[in-house]
Length: 506
Image (cartoon, rainbow, N blue to C red):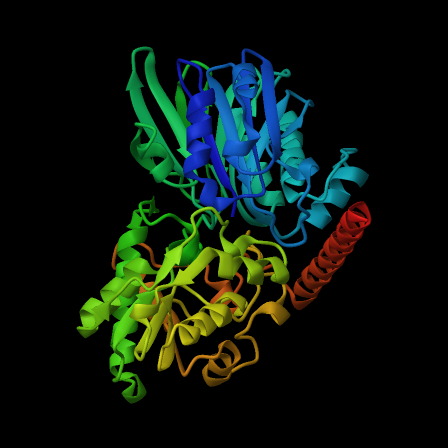
């Protein structure tokens, strides 16, 4: 789940891109990058780290031009945390193209072989985003008329990308000397939205992962990019759009509403905040029918994304709502931290309980989800240490039992605490006296209540149904093997670093 943003304006866009990435920082903390276009020349800077740490004044000065794209990176299944895999990516043939990608291709290995063996294109990293860039470059080369591009040729190229690529992808790209291109996979799994602003020189556009990046930059929401649709905005600001997929179907990732997106965003016409309120209502209905849960004294959210659900749950049941944990704002999101040891350590640094809200009480903790169980176990333990008499745990989403292969770091079923366990067994695993999960149909109903037009969702991490139809058991095994290999490499690096530090101390 990376964050992407593209801007076409009549004045320099470097500050808009930087501010947009700050607003999307929650979508990726591993690396950040910006590319701007000045005529037919690109200016690029990217590096590992948070947006605020990557860019300095000297870097911003060099990012001149009125068009640009930006990216904040979150490593996904089988990918490494590497400066080489920071985005945007660039290729100089045939026109000079730079691309930023949010999502994950499920057929990237097959495409990589095709590109090398049949199309004589070399992919230099393990990133599926570089694969996608080369596929786009190849399709642009094939669709260009007399070595020139127009909107129709670009849309034909995107149609070619849809035919070859499988998985989830939301894209912003620039073609040197032409303009900005954005498109979304035929299922609309990952979000992409367009904003517009009327400036002195005419219309200006922002295309980003979430609406919050548009509104905070002073742009009005125009609409979402439709599944399979491509947008082309040329250097003068002329706007072109066309459906490029044969059978598009809107099925957004349901986990965006549960956890990934900011609550002040609207995705595909559905308010994330309102959806989370409805999740709390749905969860309250289920708890009302559980006799063992009738002695709850207080409802406490796990900050931040579960707050709306917990508040609405408490209001619906007529229970007391309290803030029982203080959050350290300077620790990254634990869900997207690579490695269990780092994740476990960060929980205690990130949250601290307020003892008076727990002492001698039956506490209902509410979280947005339970994935690996590591964070939940630590939080339950903290509640008990703070004096809670009983600790119940409620998840605003169903059990996560299957890997997500569309851009969320859940590739290995062995890491998912709910896989192969009953609810009671998961409760024992995390140390809770009682565990209540949201039902999947109730979760869908909560989101649909904010936009009835949303009839389909990509919910594979809950139901194991992969909407692209190409995910096999062998594919999931391969992902798990790649993840284990990366973890082994990371542990070796950590051990080597520790040994080096110890030697330096001597």
